[in-house]
Amino acid sequence: MTATKKARVAEEKKPRGRPPTGNAKTPTERAKSFDEALLESGGRILNRLRLGQEANKALDDLKREYGYGSDRAAIETALVKHRKEVARRGK
Image (cartoon, rainbow, N blue to C red):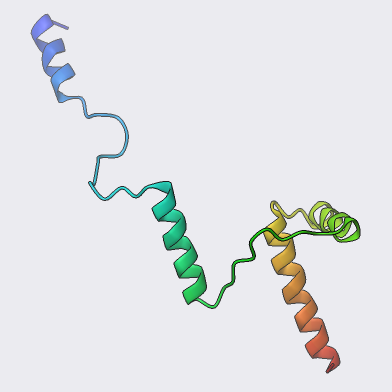
């Protein structure tokens, strides 16, 4: 390649990464927007939930046995399954 051709190729290279949109949100803004969407959809935020030793062991067992990647996934699934079981029994 000639020096001129190398210079043209260098000029034509696209910048790496996503192009800026000018609408970037801070982590705080993203979290606030996620929380608002969750609440609007009927969700709930439980801050500083504390579990006793027995409940903590049960949660660890659920995560290990069923392969849940997070505490939240295990808790949500367990609550929904329990509600369905109670409804099935008619209690």
